[in-house]
Every structure is written in C-alpha cells, then in structure tokens.
Length: 281
Image (tube, rainbow, N blue to C red; front, side, top):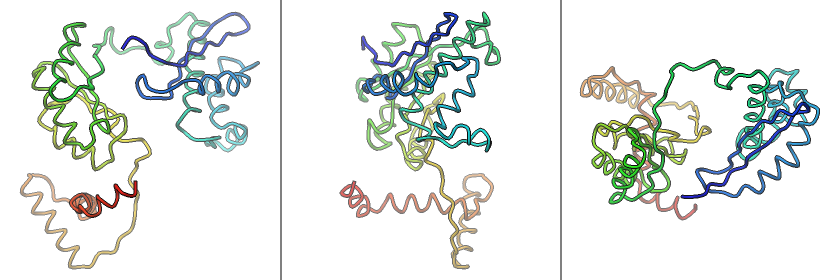
C-alpha cells in the first residue's frame, strides 16, 4: 500500500494558530471521503465561526446535539441530532482533534500533557496488517518483523474470513510461523456477533493472543428478557450447573447464565434455520 485516503481538517484562529485534525469514515484505507469533506466544509465549518477554540467540550456537545444543543445543555443529557456513530461523528472527531491541537499550541504544551501526562517514557510499537490466507499469513507477518524489527504484530479476523473457524485457522498459522516470542493481536473490526466472538476465543485459547480488538460492535448489547421456566426444567438446569462446575473446577453456573449459551448452540446446530436465514438475508 502506497497511498491512504483520509479527511484532514485545518482550523485557523483569529490570531493565526492552526490546528490539524483527521476524520475517518471507513475502516483502514477503504471508503471515499468526498461526503465527509463536504460536511466539514459546509455543515460543520460555518458553526465554528466566532466560537472560542478553547471551548472544546462545549463545541463537541453543540455539534453532537445540533439544533437541540441548548436544550440538551439545560437538561444535562445528550440529545443527539442524528446518531452516535457514522459520518457525523467522524466529522466531529476531526474538529475535536484540531481544537486540542490549537489548545496545546496556545499553551506551548503537547496535547498528551493536557490529557493527563504520560505514564512511560517509551511505548512499544507494533505492526498492523495481516490480511493474507493461512498459507501466506506467516510470511506476511514475518516480513513486518524483517522490515521494522517489530516484536508485536496485529492481524485482521472476522467477516473477511467468514466463519470463526476460518479466522482461527489463519491465526494458528500465524502463531506457528512467528513463534512464541512475538506478541500477536487480532482485530475483527466489530464484525462478529457475540456468539461468533465467543467461538473464536474458544478456538484460539491456546495461541496466547495479547488482545482481541473490537470483537463486536458497541451496539451489540445483551437484551434482557423475563422467562418463566417449568419447575422441573429449572431443577435440571440447577443440577446441570452443579455438574458442569465439578467437571471444570468452577463454581456452579446459575440457570440464568446457562440459558443463553444453550440457546446459541441449539440454533447454531439447526441447519434448516441457518439455510432459511441466509436465504432471507
């Protein structure tokens, strides 16, 4: 890769200070930035005129809540104009970065100090990439080590592979190629469901992964429901949890903790349902 698209924002104050920010509306190097640039120039930009660049939080809330920002300020909670993700937030983030840049320059301080300082003098860098197939991922990752001397690598998993076991096979090939002394991380870009992420974790439990980045989207939160169980079924679930605990050396699992994974496995094993779901997609 020799080029990388991005939306780079330049904000200049009345006294000549310039802040730079970046907005991203796509994963990696994908996507077109024409719409984001138009939003920054024609929707966001005019709202910044005459504002105090030091009011970073106030400006963020104004852009996020839109026409309701004054009402939201008085109410003490957010009333987002559109949504809390997508292109609008990408534009706001570019402004936010640029305003922090301006504040740091006005005070003669690096932004990291304004955000609370640093805990360590140096941090280990890692190489990020790793899209290759199982038979090529090892050589791809080792090329990062050869070129940059990296001791930590991050590779992509998730929807790009399909099923979790396919991603797991690539990760296993990667670990075998780079050996145990190099840190290995994975990033699913939020493309797994909760069940798929759990399955991937099980399949790679022995591969000593340093971290699993963005396994699911932030909005994929559990939904709470109330279910009435027959007394006999509840007793069986209690007994099941006790037996499972003895076999695994863990405390007995409560029925409420057992129901969801049991249903996930039941649905995953129903080939008829899987076929019908794909046909409707």
